[in-house]
Image (cartoon, rainbow, N blue to C red; front, side, top):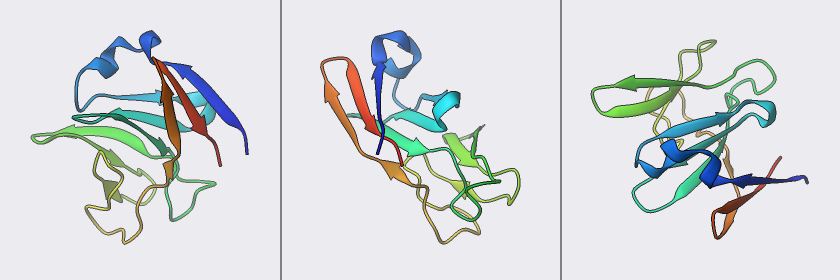
Length: 104
């Protein structure tokens, strides 16, 4: 398994709870919660080789959506629509402002 090192200081938008940043080259979403940052695999759990999960926004803040299947997920990766599967959460360890993410 590969490890990805990300300096969170490079993404000032992540200081705001509810913000999300896509690390496009690695297919990883970084999401700021109330207390911490999560890493989610930016692939649809239904067809990971085809479906890329995109960011959407609504009255209750940001959410994720697969444009291929119209599946939706909360900022925590939990299914909120048709899907019964959640987005894959990637292990993330913080050392100061550096996030170490284990890629699948």
